[in-house]
Image (cartoon, rainbow, N blue to C red; front, side, top):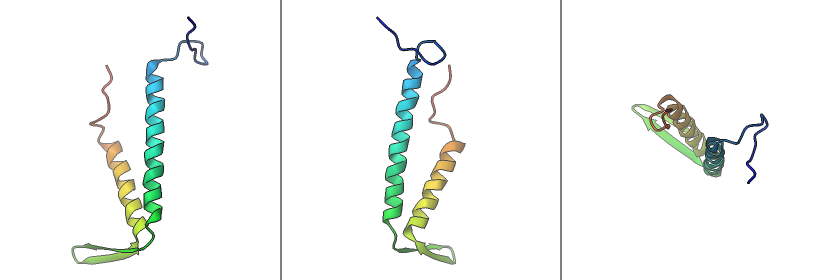
Length: 83
């Protein structure tokens, strides 16, 4: 049996395949989210307390997407723990 080798000469770790799969899924979700964001170009109004902001809907969606990325990176509760 031949085993797959990495450029450093050692066998490929199963975890690297897992990381590649996660990267592919993350890219697909990002593309889908951005397609959703930029397909909503009509004006949208946000009312917060006594303030009112009107901007294209994609601006609000993009802001929520960015906030989700920041919050997800700040709270690593769902990341697998190292053993």
